[in-house]
View 1 (tube, helix red, strand yellow):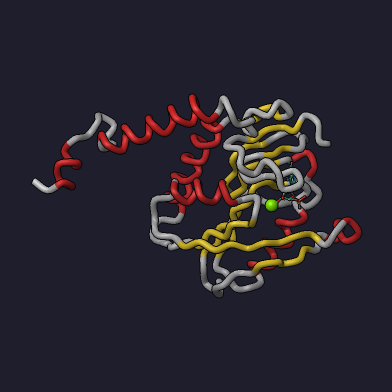
View 2 (cartoon, protein in one colour):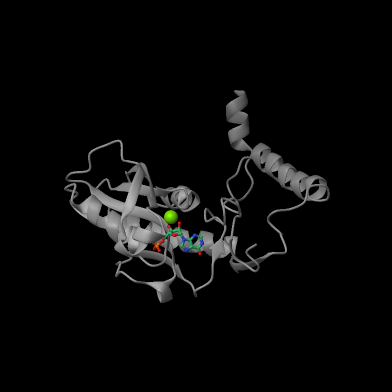
Length: 218
Ligand code: IMP
Ligand code: MG
């Protein structure tokens, strides 16, 4: 019997090969016991209050993935992630969509406060493929005023896409200025400044595995 075949036969009930399961539990134990005692933890920073836990995020994203897979079966949609905030949502969401699909990324930024109300945004990184006749799903971290998304959705529609839908993890609905239809929504949240799971405050906290309210933005 080959080495590989021998490995394939030793499985724990969950289906994970014993060797991988052992390495995993070792690495978790290592992180918890050895590292956390010595390195100041960003994830348990006292300035953060958990709003949506890692488990809540993951289970909602699995549901969204199933819904998208059902709606787009046989259609090869193109997921367009909006950098940088949607990076974690994008990577978890696409793994939850078990159909053929493609991915692209765009980076956009608003022009600044003076043109904020016009909703004009600057494209910092554009798509690298044409999208005419494609089914687009924009993947965004949060819809706040809606100015960014209403510009972006119109821009993508004008390029001849067959359809343009929006998957947004968070909806800060109380602050909406432009109507933006959210086809796949993770969570509605109250009007607090939130960080984590891709969202930042001055480029910090994107790496948190959960969504938190920043108690004291300093
Ligand atoms: P909108 O154009 O006002 O909808 O702004 C959307 C963008 O603002 C999002 O893509 C985020 O990058 C950013 N944003 C809005 N609210 C928050 C927040 O609570 N935390 C972090 N970023 C936010
Ligand atoms: Mg964003």
